[in-house]
Length: 114
Length: 110
Image 1 (cartoon, each protein chain N blue to C red):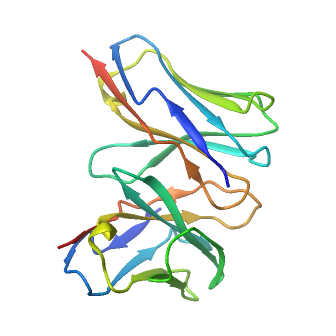
Image 2 (cartoon, rainbow over the protein chains, first blue to last red):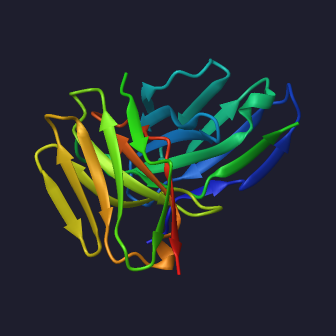
């Protein structure tokens, strides 16, 4: 069974640009969560999608947005990049068939903002 | 919101010894407590989890305990091996949002 796929794995952008990251969950999983990981703030929840609907959202500015497609693939977008957005962005795949589910993480996308 | 504290931040053990990592949480509504292992350059890997209706769970050399009254849970690794060296994260949740501890860097000395 294939795991969680995130593309690209590495990305370098400059301040003010925007970026789109992609996540393909495990086949059959219906929910996807996104997290930001930095040395200073640790792992922080961004948002969670189920059946193309955002169900939960963390405390991040509106520059951070996401969406989910009918095949469960998800994208997150960060507009007007700031230096502080440099981080490892992790996608987690969730079965979505029960109330509380294990979350399986992908390898992440390393974003560097210059 | 949920606040998860994790101790210690670093842990060095001799190969074959046990390692214990402790976490506390603040939100009594949290009912799912997973533990993740993260190796360099990789995403967090779920190694074990426990739900609030269970006090203890074991999987080979790894065990977790949960004390709902005290709002704390612990990870126990017995007979540590060099491949156990990694960063370990605890987390708590009452829905699909995981609140993570700050992580524990475990080093197993040969």
